[in-house]
Length: 142
Image (cartoon, rainbow, N blue to C red; front, side, top):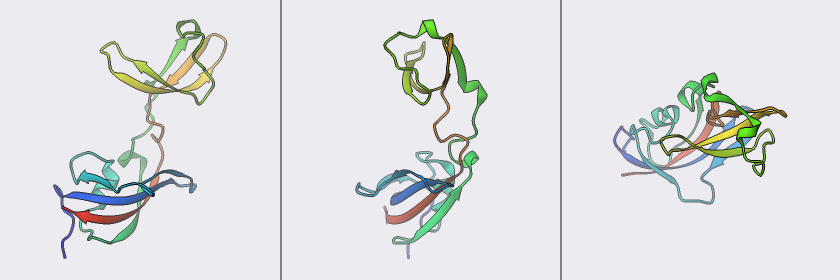
């Protein structure tokens, strides 16, 4: 029976959840996720867990934050004077915004603090610092 190895194109169904059981993503009701194993297209901890799997096999994978979206980087948080943000933009804690960098790239950020004078924006991935659990099923190997 063929086993997954680096360089294979695979398709998986998955359910991703946090340690508390809350689901953050799933392929249920969609086409399976397709990617090349070992190419960096998915988080490292999930990628590494596929080696040796066979079609139809299911397993649960625990991925530590360091092998998922990394640890929270305090340098990715920035305080901005409230006056620098247009008045029509909502600034409630938890609001996700898109910023454009000086080189033209778009960067998602989240409002993590706000008061009358400043707003703290966080560019860390929303799942940074979190351990993740994936229930996966290998659908195919090409």
